[in-house]
Image (cartoon, rainbow, N blue to C red; front, side, top):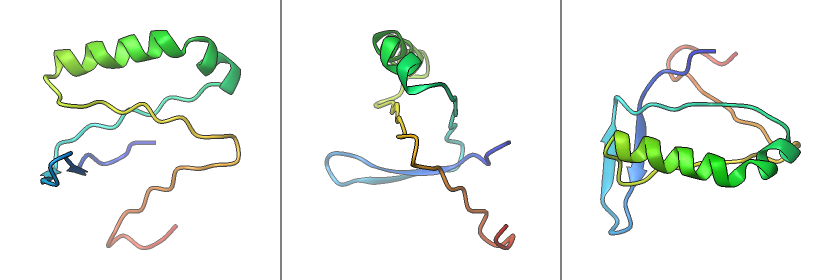
Length: 78
């Protein structure tokens, strides 16, 4: 699935940034494997953030009963 770029970020000082070129990377694995490699994932995220000169990088883990919903405004609900 290709997710269209773009995002809105609120900084610690309350500033809201709209970034139409923001990139989102989605990767799936088991909870056990994620927890086993968590420190490695953290180091990788920090490295990518440094390479892209990002103020922050988020690694978000979803519990098995959660989901990620992506809406495409103006294209109707699917």
